[in-house]
Length: 381
Ligand SMILES: *Cc1c(COP(=O)(O)O)cnc(C)c1O
Figure (spheres, rainbow, N blue to C red):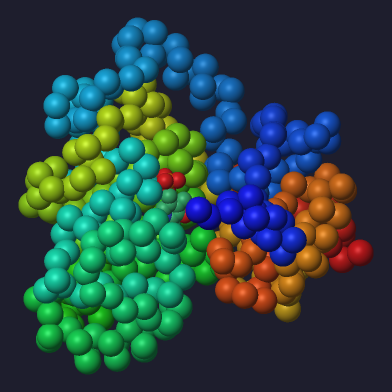
């Protein structure tokens, strides 16, 4: 039998042992081991999940509607409450697309959509840095795949020219804002590439961009004005949208096909109707959060400018890496910043390439310019 204890010891010795931290949240602050720190590692990008005013307004409404805290079933059986379709219709309308489909999480979405739509006659071409959930979806699908160099559309074009004609269909898969580097894909370029190969689908995961980018908060696809050209537009409600769950915008046909074939949708209890109602409540208000989006872009710019030459220049978003290199140095620096009241976390291999251990700052709209300036001073010391 495997000695798991021994494996854990080895992980510990190499500085790679993970644990679940005990933390208490107080708005933009986080309390850990008795210390209060500014949370610089949150995905609550617009600060919505900690907004007491929004929560109170929502709970007032909820009492009138009496929405259950469990759906008690998959949507295909008895779990399909009206609030699901209401949110789907709201989203399809906002994005100007034929259809929307909700999932329990981004992880469910990314591990379910590709396995449902692809087969051995398909080819998946995915960016080298796509999220683990997408990789898992590709592996689960058993479909042939290749990874193209990160954000390298030239490399993608070569692969398309070489392989597209050999397969019935090709799926180009990317994120819009990348999780670990915070850089942004050129979606318009991907759309034009896709259009030159008629058997090609474009799949974009906007997990980090939904809510944060675009005039109405609809993501990079809105910012780059190509929402209608992305066949499979995925995002999560667990980050800027301050809730839980995920969505896909697609054609009516794809929606119906997924309802019939997508295993994480069919074989899992749907999210509680009350949770969907909270998502809908926030999604309705999304176009109005322009001040939040503006504040976030100002502080993000400030920090990435200050980190130029240290990894910060890669970022074009509120996710800002500070690349340190070795694991031990990275852990030391993050602990040092934590002692000074800045809750930032080291990200190490295998999450990022070897030798690029980094502190990954992810900013939220409730962090002020003054707080970022103070952080920058402390990084410089
Ligand atoms: C967070 C994330 C997911 C997973 O979404 P959840 O709703 O948290 O399961 C998927 N894709 C990307 C790019 C992410 O960053």
